[in-house]
Length: 78
Picture 1 (cartoon, rainbow, N blue to C red):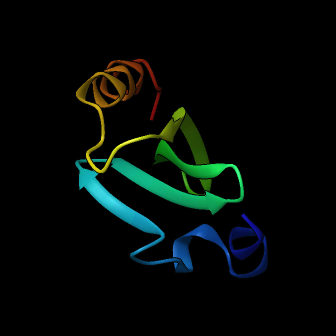
Picture 2 (cartoon, helix red, strand yellow):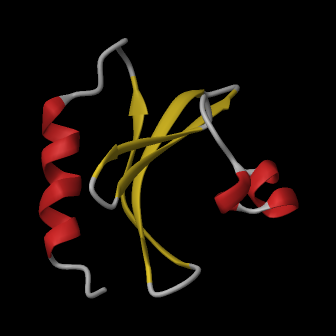
């Protein structure tokens, strides 16, 4: 998260940020508590809407987490 504050989200690339599909992006964060993932979309300029954050417990992203993010993305106004 410090990296976002220091250089800005738009400057961060893989492995920290990954484009998933359409306007949906994944933010990857590592901390002493474990690995966290956040799904987000950017809307109207620099506005970012975080759709879902979860602690990752396996190698593969759970499809249920992605489904929640996709559903919430539909409700975000551009």
